[in-house]
View 1: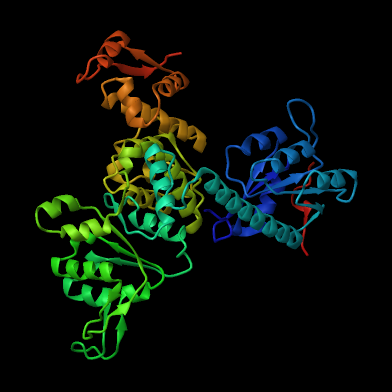
View 2: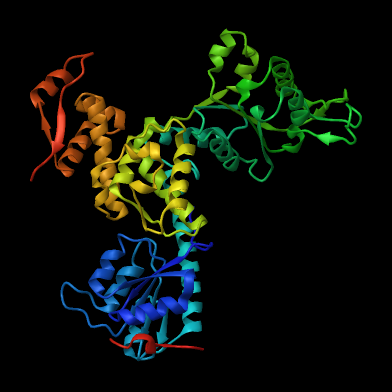
Length: 498
């Protein structure tokens, strides 16, 4: 979940005609706030849906109310009636008059006198930004509960919905779980989710990766040792299993565990006891075991590289995490999440993608999966030249060749998202020779929905008869193609120092 209470600049929308006042206000607020000036009431209302805003600073003395322009109070009402209400701080030369009272009744966060007291304004902005951050966190938590999503495992695809459902079911019982998937798909996050949703959530979650230690140290790391068990063993040490007692132990890269240690792990799972190195005393442990691997354990069993009895013991429930290229429809959601996360973490202005940037994300195969996407977004945010839109020049060199010429058109995130979807549709159709049935299946959507997107994006179909014929022939690729369809004034004196 995202919060704006960290080191990132808070975004304030100033609705006032006076540009000189805007410049003066930005100077007194300093670098903690990013002030965006909007002179018109109708323009401010439009920006609510296209920009990331933490607070609105509204001049109640602005004229308005003539259709289609709202009045200041109508704009206030629009802001506070949003799903996550935007806090609105109003100001007026008659702050205690009838207009201010009406603003309070409509939900204004605070109303200030003009000229504005700088310290009073900063105090009001701080409280307003903290409140909206909390509301966003609460709304996100409620959304996760209502949709059944699990924090950290973002995605609207059918495959991720199945993963989330399986995690919720298996969390209710204490059986062993084997999580499989390519590197970077989020196996550790899935293991933590199982623990958080289980009755063991208040007990320890201990993670251990087999590949991080040489074989000679894994026994000691997992099961501990007694004092004097070996050279330099100056004191007794508990292993990971004992540290996780009552909770969950997550053993990553289980496929890299050597056969002698596989035998010892099997005995621990069967007997629910551990023996430290240098001791013959069995110590009972109550630990839930979750394992993960990116290797084919069934094949390893057949080759004699992995014990069959251990495989059956750790794989009572198996969870297969899909590769990112297999759920491309989740890329926009993930990219937006990491953009906001890293922009706040590194105190950057980036808030959206250009269509060209989004297209490159859509076309890339992501061999490193979600972890690679995180890396690309963080790198782009860190190296961006202070722009609010990440563009082609912010991408790693290997992704730039996947961009499209639309990058010259800088729009909102909604614009980029639409371009993103358009590129996904094009790529799916191109990969399947224009066969809409196969393209829809690859995208995880119905053919009817695919048709609606083709119409929405202004794409016309060619070789329709041939395509329909190909869709009726099993084992043959279609030849269809798609192409774009050629169709009050005061300036600085409005501020006062405390």
